[in-house]
Amino acid sequence: MFSIERRDGSTSARAGVLRTAHGEIQTPIFMPVGTGATVKGVLHRDLKSEINAPVILANTYHLYLRPGTDIISRAGGIHSFMAWDRAVLTDSGGYQVFSLAANRKLTEAGAIFRSHIDGSKHIFTPEKVIDIQRTIGADIMMAFDECAPWPCDHNYAHRSMDLTHRWLDRCVAQLSETEPLYGSEQMLFPIVQGAVYSDLRRISAEKIASAGMPGNAIGGLSVGEPAEVMYEMLEVVNEILPADKPRYLMGVGTPANILEAISRGVDMFDCVMPSRNGRNGMLFTREGIINIRNQRWASDFSPVDASSDSEISRTYSKAYLRHLVISGEMLGAQISTIHNLSFYLSLVREARERILDGTFGTWKKETVQRISERA
RNA sequence: GGGGAGAUACCAAAGUGGCCAACUGGGGCAGACUGUAAAUCUGUUGUCUGAAGACUUCGUAGGUUCGAAUCCUGCUCUCCCCA
Image 1: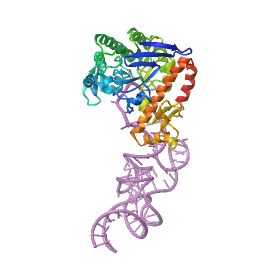
Image 2: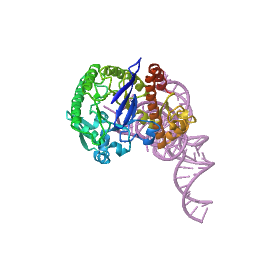
Image 3: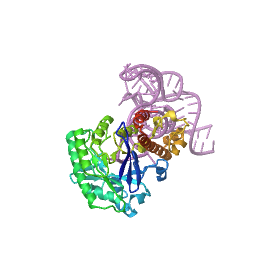
Image 4: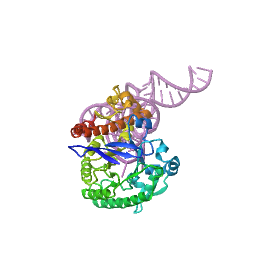
């Protein structure tokens, strides 16, 4: 399922391949977020050609509320429903336990939610979350967890982690008692928690590793803590998570965050940043970060990114994109999103090449610097 | 020709004696965004200053008043109705 092609000599980075029922995923990889069965504003065609994403995310909570599992089931699963033949990973709704905290209540059984759409009441249990993800038909399903907030004290973090671990046991049990509905294999990734406490992270990593799943995730990071703390947690956790299985850092992050995490042994990432920030006018480029709404780009007729893998980034000028974004034209959001995702995917592809040719360490160092600053 | 209404900052539009450098919206400028309740949210927008503060503003020229965007008079301009 996962094989490692090469380990970097000077860092913990690895280049590998994860095989799914809907294609191979070369790692390290960034997975665009498509919460509601769509990467906002991007046609599948561009997701494949311009961005070349082998896998995208969708979200259990959001799809469960709308369109609902019945529709997805009748469509024959998410791939068929959205006409996407590459891999899909579904988040379990654990992040919504965190982000919709005002509208939910946690119990041992699960999380009781108020729908943000119509206020209706729902309960998510580990069993139900597995069932929904079976119905959705994701290639990679995520265990149901609590993503603890930051800051959070050791006591809360400990209790939260224990709950996530008990929920994991139930997820694994439900997994073994159910079968895929559409004939293609589904994997389950459990999630390490433990907030910013090394002792808890160690315990959690041991627990997650012992589940013996084909891949493992690291959650509860980049929720507000300093990046250095996140890196420290990654080092602690990756010491323990099995080296021969993919490691997925959930919800991260900036291009620099991703390169730093790759160098610490992480293989998979997802984040709303390239898509959401793109819609809001923030562009990531090889020359650094730019806010395309700024006056300084008003008459810059050079391409958004002349050296991009994406034809779209090479075609439209900064001045034109600025005009579109400032005018609130939907094409502005589309171009920005495609550009950013294309940048993220080409960044991880280059990281992979550097790992394979043994130059990752030095390349990472100079690249992090350049892409983190404002252009 | 007669009658009426009105002129406020980049635009629109509140404000009818001190709480007004002036509500609010738009526009402009900048910032935020990390497993998406986000094509969203925040700040700022007379001049000088880091700030305190100071200075110049409400068509225009005068006047009344301790004090005027607000009251009075002349002028200029705009809009509406009737002929």
